[in-house]
Image (tube, rainbow, N blue to C red; front, side, top):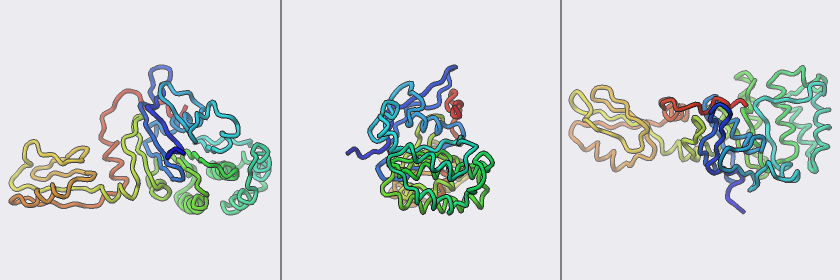
Length: 309
């Protein structure tokens, strides 16, 4: 068996008019992991998920789930993969219990007890039509339908969208508990909300303008990333000074600051030994790292503008 439940190779998608949503994307998600896919609105997240599901055809490269191109996969394979899109569309005239019973007919395996438990746990109304529910409640109902078949792969696009901050936190805590009992299910969730990702994911990928700019285990990333501040004697930083592993170095008078990944401690110790030089390091949160990686990049083309297609 391959080590990857989800894999893309040089994946690209361009839309009419020259809009590039995904460009040269190489993504690997291991079996049984929870992978958080983060990027700004329009970065290419939704397009990538739709390519994985076979709902869009790539302009170049390949996208495989369970080692298969889902666009050409038989129903038995597609039934092992669940997808909750950013724009949930459910039959508005049914109640949630009616919707659950209806959806069960399309699957060989269906956990009715799980669907009933989640409906109760997430306080979903059972006597009102789905079309009368809030957007957050409709999203919860869609996730119930996605989890009930006990999928091997679960793709979630902005799973907590439409919920207020308190409801969002409560729902994510409950979703974490459910995913913790997922029996090896692989989860790929996309979001632009960093706090969602920190609560749910084991591994993260940052996408910007259709390109993957970082992929790492969350715990390793947090352990290896530091904000470094170097203060030199005198009035200015030496010309040409740089910090290995830094995306950019910010200079103000004699002070140089940067966020670095895996900077050699021997190098920092050598800096500290120089006369009059002070070196300090500080932990970095994921939000600060995200802004550093995508917030200072120059604009390039039209990537991501078709991400809602």
